[in-house]
Length: 321
Image (cartoon, rainbow, N blue to C red; front, side, top):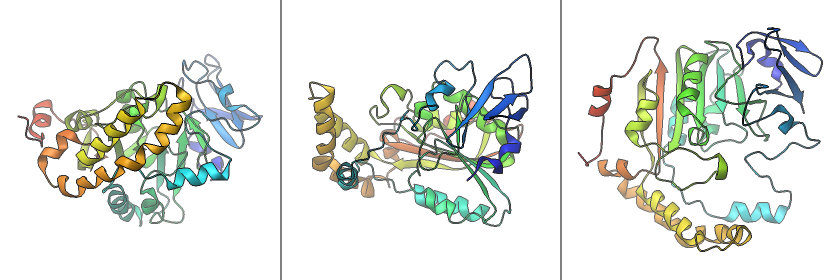
């Protein structure tokens, strides 16, 4: 999608004033701010000039850089990566996206913002194929990828208030410095009655290197979205997947250096991936929530709603209390 489809929604992420189209980018209309947002490779880079982590120049190289996801040009390596089994058994994403897609299928002109959308997340194709033909799907990230049509930092989402009907944050909130700020931004850009869908890990080792910061229990995840009325929430992948992840990282812990770790990391999935299939049995038990590999939340923006903490505690689903 070309950025012209959502250009009218853009604002300065630093001061939230409108931006004006300028040569090779966008200029904040507030002269006291003065931030300029370039367009590289046809993609607006809406990173504040005061951002402490990312700079717009990070995306100005002659070839799109690898900020988070590494792309391999060698076809043999790409084939080997496809052959490596996953250690996560995700039983819910396709079903959840299918249900959300059906809800939006008759909403002409609906707008969807995908945060962390440089590549397709698990199951999101079920949503995309159900959206109406005139839907505007904005796929954002702090990384170039096959889907990226805007670069942004989700601590400062560069869109006007009440702009979107659905915001997706799949496997994102563990990789941000302040997830509560990011969720507040999601709330801000959603229309009243708009929906949020998030998937976030709980019992998983570090998988994003220096861009990996947080994990959430079921109640911690629900409180993160306390300003949203819940539609559905629960376990995404269970204890079998958690154990498979742990066994994989137990094996890779023997690597004496980064180069050898790359080789061990590849082969470690093969002897342990089968453990994830215990989820087919264990995910039926309430106790599995306390050892979940990942969790999901689907909610609706209802202005004025806040989940009280005493109600939050009543929602505990495990056996530990």
